[in-house]
Length: 373
Picture 1 (cartoon, one colour):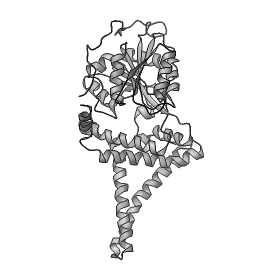
Picture 2 (spheres, rainbow, N blue to C red):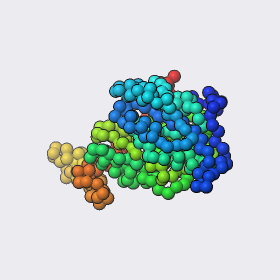
Picture 3 (cartoon, rainbow, N blue to C red):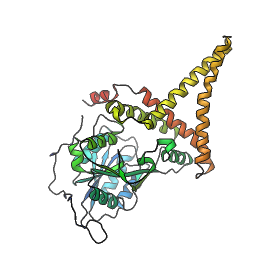
Picture 4 (tube, rainbow, N blue to C red):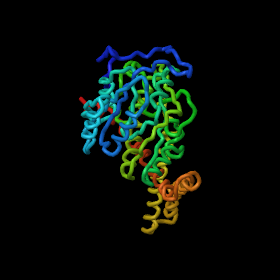
């Protein structure tokens, strides 16, 4: 495993310790809330960075907090914006992340962070008021290693709104609580996460060979070591989804590719939610291939049985009818223009995720590890 976090590495004497049995006030809240280090990987976030940072700095949290921005090699004005923000507020620290990858950003930020509670934030996520207070209170009350909530995707344009609907629907991402919410309780993973620092360090830090699903993989190792991952629907974080079909397709393809890496590494975690997009993609591709063979064969004067292969087109036709039906029946809470885009978004998410999963090479994580060395 490639990581940079060690148990005794860069210890800061000024860190505030998390008491296992903190005193509580009359309202049930811990009398003294510990200080928090908020860490944010940042890459090409010119559009959303200032808004996301403002949501963090606006938190009313009595324990105090810092914000560590891990800057990757952005191609827009992200770095300039980050440094302007840091110059205006001494709670912000900027650290370099030359690789631009989330796992290395998290390891660099955690190494720099001064406090014993680590809160991960994405640069395109907007924390709601009271997020830190709610999260730390849940962390202390449950004794969990990591507490988190769900990705409440919200779009601005009609296309983004269609993506947001799909991401928060069981038809798009499956019935995972970190996407669709649910009851509070133990979970495999959560969105973002508020960690006890010692849990990250004991697990060996983030695996820097994982370009995607690095948080899920870390939480798996924490759970394997006996740590508790706790989901609470009270931690609802606004997320800005991809704004174009091309960027959505690329995102979902990468998700599928790296989920296959996780499946190979931890085969006991594979379930129907991960297999469904791959199966649908394979069936649709097979149907198209068989149907096309029937059309070509018919045009070339092949025997009549060959022409029946064109019935293969029924498979993708049924799938398209299915996603269209989902939009018509279940997306009634959005405008007509958004609903019209939902079938395209669902098809893109399923197909690109499934294609990534099916074509993910066994050497993918190993290749990245060699490139780092």
